[in-house]
Image 1: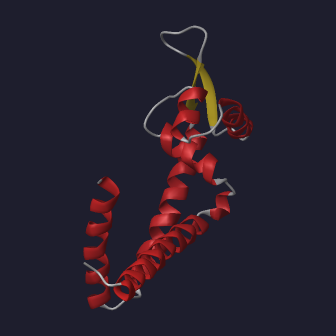
Image 2 (image 1 turned 60 degrees about the vertical axis):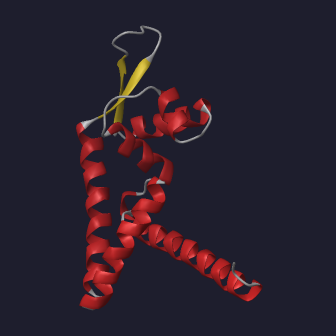
Length: 145
């Protein structure tokens, strides 16, 4: 059993780790900021890259109200990134789909993030790169547990 000091050190290290992951995520997202998409808009494009979805589906995926997602979808539609198509089995609903422009923006955002991350990792020495990649496997296991 951990003593109080060891527990405090463990807790502090866990908080520091979570904050570092958060900062890394924000930096990666900032690399794609030139597209001027909100995090919700980006998440919608990512979701739609897997196939069509209703506004309600998108709202559930992002844990938000359908009305709020409707506003997001409308903004993306106005920019020509998504379009509404009739639902194949439910005439009362519309599917939201990526347009060719939306797909290109999605790819551009993804590429900008990957490029920034690859360049940042390339600046590390080989030992730190190996440590980071090993930690990545552990983080993946944590996320999947």
